Image (cartoon, one colour):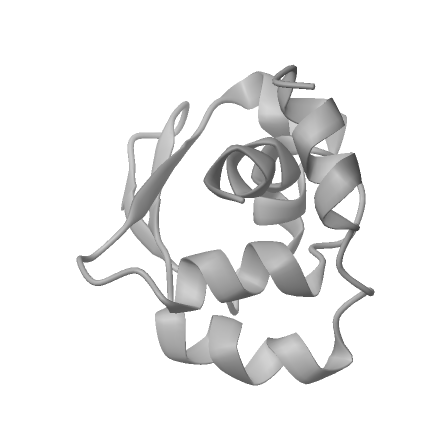
Length: 94
């Protein structure tokens, strides 16, 4: 599930409920790095500043904090989670 969540953050598709749950359930603060190529590719984390507020921006690279409460709140309106078999296949472990 964590593997899926990391891939989903940098993918163009909207975040699904599995990704949001992984982020919301993290016990420690989480931060993600946004590089110029992520902006150009329309990465999900770039499109959702409500979930990933900017913690640092040097004009090229951004560090964004994961707003765990906002991720939890967004889970109800998120896309359906992938099946466990799909997660395993996508991880390369299958």
